[in-house]
Length: 440
Image (tube, rainbow, N blue to C red; front, side, top):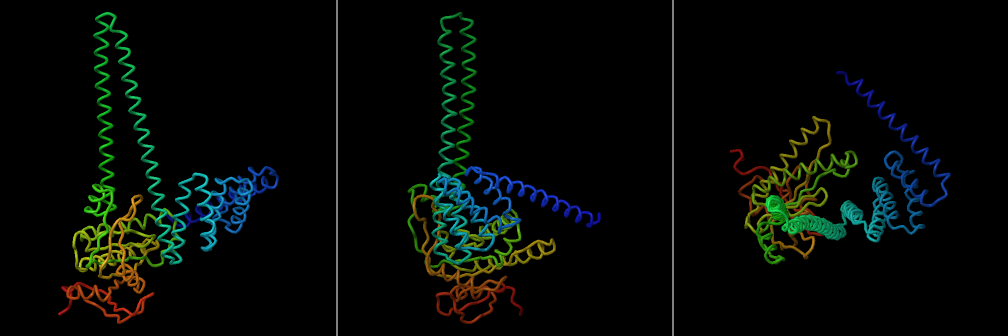
């Protein structure tokens, strides 16, 4: 089939959609001119801001500001949160990071006052993303902590709701059983035949109730098993066991840890061209492959921050040489290169990554008692991040300490001493191939 009819058909659909949008906007603007009630004006300006978000961001921004002003006049925190969120999204799409951060912060405060936890969580995630885009890692870390707290609160609410539903279900079953027992007691003075029939009915009902209770207990057990599995996905097995028994985890120092930072190149530009669902799916595909690779090599995933992926070895399993980490880093670059070639053939955007690795002491543990997450701290973590920042796309940049611990296992390209952010000049090496592949 020729592609020209498809292109023409697509253009017609786009033109029709544009025409419908223009008519809808014109109708709303006409209603706005005739509206006198503040509540109606707010609904129209808010709808216009959302409708024009992609087609006319400048006009959308103006309507968003009007909606925000009206919500402040009405002293309606819920509408203030919704209007500020739209204004923030418009500013963020327009690359006005500071303005977007101001509106997201206003939306968060209003959402908290209006008891809108999901909106508050969304704004915190956006504020963390903005801080990362501006390389304000301290603010990003603080927003990340608040995001973690709000996620924990959300999970707590869900758990409480499930508990209430379970309690209501059990109470209904017990009430049903009680009602049937009352019927049985009332009929005991009756005929023997009726007594026998009712006794049989009671036994049958009890069997049904026991079956339902057994089924629900099985469901509860399955949910408990899934919760334990989820905990193991978040924490190393030894840490998860300690947390389950003691309800807290003692921080530990590991002298021979290897830390790896992976960061995608051009992620922000790709994010502007791709639909959010497509972008998240692509990121999930890559990170899932990373999880599989490190899982086969006794490496612990620490966390992801936006498009950055952080992992470490030499922690609870005592995998104290950086050889496995460097080997996995080369495998990841090989995987991304093949994926890039495939995506280019498909005409789709692709990612390249910078990888930095350092070998040294870290402190690892779980901080707090709510919304906990396993994390690592120390100068080794910062140096690994500097290694990643000083790396070229598609390469694996290794510090002098990590290279010295694995020098006989790989080929190397010495880069010399290179200055890093907030650090003195440091030795850097590009890892090439395993030593077994060296040419004679």
